[in-house]
Structures are given as structure tokens and as C-alpha cells.
Image (tube, rainbow, N blue to C red; front, side, top):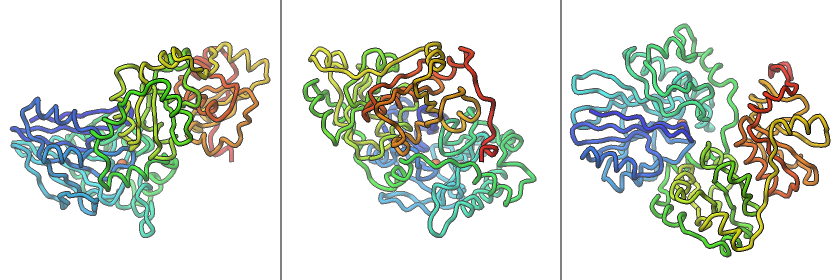
Length: 470
Ligand SMILES: [Fe+2]
């Protein structure tokens, strides 16, 4: 028997590969199919099942393509009604994989079809529980994503309480909890950076599993402090219930090389967006195609694509480090951005060689930033989340979270000079590129972000409790 956790840091997502005696199963696969097919091939196994814990909101899962290529059966729990063929499992149903089995536990709450799967090994022991977004390490799934006219978030939280108490917490204390997400995911609010734990330990440390907790207390705790979900979540839920463009077709078109002259023409079209995916350093030092947004592939690429590109059908062309084009197209499609048309052949060097201009964002060190602040005459903005800003920030710097850049953009005056920082320089570069693409002439990024700024000895605020601000 083989059980592997497949962690994707960009999405803080965990898929699982299970194999026994020539049969394999995948739980919650990402959009691409090849890695799973290759794993099964290496084991000489046939993928028999693709199990889904629920309709994901934060990524488009690849069950339809994977089933088509392998002949596997797609399994969901009760209440799942997608527009493609599935086996709709019932609570307690067992699925044989070689010499082992997975037992479906219907655990509604995060969503009404949410289900967990318990592995029963050859000896009849239960070593693992795949809990999806029902139970995370240190947290539970948010209950506000599947709200309907007849189902409030409190109703969903109530179901989650019952699922945890009746189905999950009754499992053996030494069972390993394998969740679908870890820290950084917007599917919960307080997840640990650990990717698995024993149930017994979670009972001691996870606030939502406290033994003396009443249902009312639970509902209050899990529904308090939830931030609005990223704007792409409803689109991904919709896509996960339907049949989408095949990943092979998306990859074929998205990896089309485009010469500099054609790329220029395309970049000037209103209906095409250019995304520069290179490293922070290359983007800042070499400049970019006018109008391009920076979303570096070495960061939380997919969630930022989903949060910032409001039209999921947006036509996209991109600039990438040579050799990473296939990866970039894959990572766009993981959150449903399937309309990539191609990349700049030869990169920014080909663009420059063709005699075309580049846009450059100003870049200063933390020390230069500290000096500029003393001089005045600049508008300094901290683009981190409100919660990060409230915990500590530089005196005289306003909060302008990247998450809400579009809705707050009316506050920005194109003729002013802006200096932006975040925690480490990734988000501020994204924000600076969007400022520039929207006509702000003078925009400067602080290299190294808040981490370096703190070292300059500049005056910082103490922690401000959000409630004292009201
Ligand atoms: Fe989820």
C-alpha cells in the first residue's frame, strides 16, 4: 500500500495518491492530469477511482479529464449533482482499491456534498482519514461559501458541528488527518502550516474540536472573523460542476510562441491582458511590456491571478522565464483562466531587440524609503492585508491592500508619486505594476518590503486592536 500527500504550495492544496496491488486512486486532483498518470504508470497501477471531497472553490479540479484518460470512476458524496457522469456515493459506502478500501463519510458543513474518506488497510485498521475541507490542521472549513436562499452560514456551521462530532471525532485518536488545505488557503481562517496530524492531537489543539464546546459556541466561532472570499471562488465552483475545456487543448494554445511584433500588436488590444510572470529582480531591472501586470510565478501565483483578474474568460498573453511556459499555462488553468493565447518568444530581450520600449517601476531600498519618508512629498502605501497592517506598520504609511486594489483605485491620483511596500516585495510589485498599467506615472517599489524597513529603525506603530478603531 502506498499513500502519498501531494502538496502544491501556490494553492496550499493537498491532493493524495493511493495505490494497492495494481490499483490506484486520486483524491482531489489539480487540473493537470499528467503527474497522476505518471505516478500510476511508475507503480504499474491502473487509476480506478478519482475521489472528490467536495466542489472546490479555490481551484478547478481535474477529475473529468483524468477520468476520460484513465477510465477511472469519479466519486462524490451525497448531494453532488454535476453535469458529468459520477458515482454518487452514500454515507458508509466502501470502495475497493487493490487490497485496501476507502470508506465514504458524508461530512456536510463546508458545503452540503462535503465528504471525507477513511482508509481501511489490509488488516482492517484505519490509519488515515482524508477530511477535505471538513477538518484542517488547526481549523475547519469556512461555512459561508455554499450559502443559498434556504441555507444560511449558521445552518452550514451547524451541519459542520454535527459532522465533526458524529463522524470525525469518533474515529480512532491515532488516525492521521490528511486535509485538503494548509496555511495560506482562503478556505479556512486559521490553518496550521503542518500538513497532517493525529486526530488525538487535533482534539487537544484545534479550537473547533474543544470537548466542552456547545453547538452555539461553535457556530459563533467559525462564522466570526471571516473575510470575503476571493472574487474567483464562485467561478471555480461553477466550473467544477461542469465540463471545461480540456487541459491538453489549453496547454496547446497557451504555449504558442508569439514574435515581438505580433505580441506588441496584441498587447495594445483592449481585450488582451499581458501578465509578466518572471522573477521580481528581472521584472524590476529589465522593465516590462507597457501595460503588463506583474504576477510572478514564484509566489502565490494562482490565487493572485484569481483575485486580481476579474474576468475569468480574459484573453491573456504572457512573459515567462524560458522553459517555464508550460508551467505558467498550467498554473493559470488551475484557477480556471483557460484563455491563454501564448507567450513572448525570446522574452523581453527579443522585445528590446525589436526596438520596442519598456515600462519600468522605480525601485528603492528600505534605507532610501526611510529617508524619503522623512523628506515628505510622497504618498507611501502599505499593500499588505488589513490584519497585517493593524498588527504593526510604519507611522505615516496608509493601508491600501492589494486584495482590494480595483475597488479602491478611484482614490489614486495618477499625477502623484507613490511608494509601495508589502511584507517582502512580491505583492508591492504586483500593485505597482497595476498602478503603472492604469496610468500612474511615478510609482516606486520598496525592495525587501516591511522586513527590511523594520531594520532601518523607522518609527513603527504598536499593535492596534481592530475593535479599538471602531
Ligand atoms: Fe473548499
